[in-house]
Length: 143
Image (cartoon, rainbow, N blue to C red; front, top):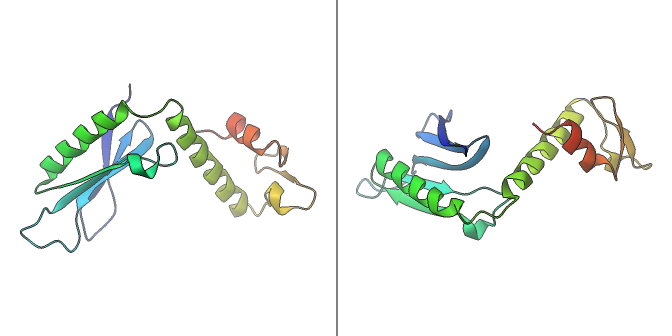
């Protein structure tokens, strides 16, 4: 089972950490903006999409980073048991599809849906059509 890891973001204005379960980003812990000094300065969000519905996500606030971290971990442990089978795969497929589209556009190649014939060439050299795109991405471009 993967463990939770944190990576600091490049936000110069507020301290923010993205939280990962394996390679899937499952939430964030960060300083809250615009909060009065007497309010909870830290917040967290827990969940990912696609894979989980927005109503399944968990949120909370805390006075300190350590308390927010503890709140995140408690919410994540409760949420983990509710995650449906296949949710992480759905997230990975969505991520791979978008990375593939961005790479196609960066290479100046049309997607099969952008060509009247419904056929195109992938940046990897494979011939693809509208019906084979998902299978091609699953077989060749899932990372």
